[in-house]
Image (tube, rainbow, N blue to C red; front, side, top):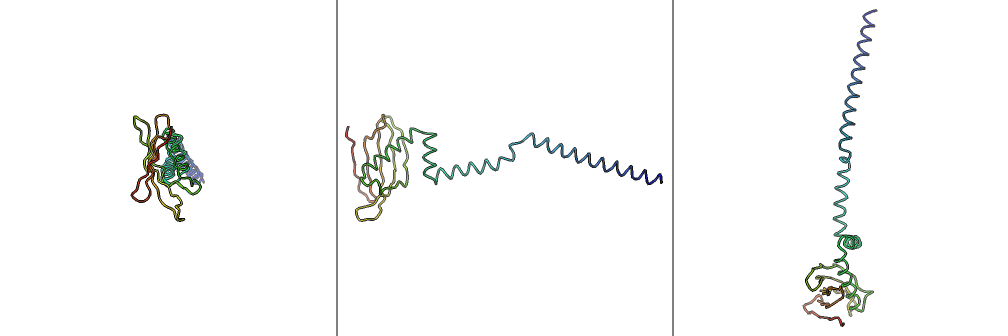
Length: 160
């Protein structure tokens, strides 16, 4: 009988030592997790950055918000040029912006190159029109060039 008691005691000691070892391993795992709590957020952060880059390219409202927030001078030049195009066309309700254009800074003031719009033509079909817009240092329109889908260029000068 003594033997069975000794055997039971050894078995419980072995079980207790196994449990203690697993507790030590779990403690080590917890300790490693506390050293890098942001590690589990890295994939989420990566997906968010990719989503923002795609949204800037594909969603016009997000692109406008981004530009208005992070480069307001460029946004105001584009917005002024867009408004001048709407005023110049006389058909503002039948006009949509395809490409907002690229803003370039010069010593005389910014200019917006490649503002592409689709407007409803006289024949009832949409036509693609490209504008180049020059602004003075104060941000008002100096010159607006209209390049229809063809090869002809019209120039409209702003009156002071």
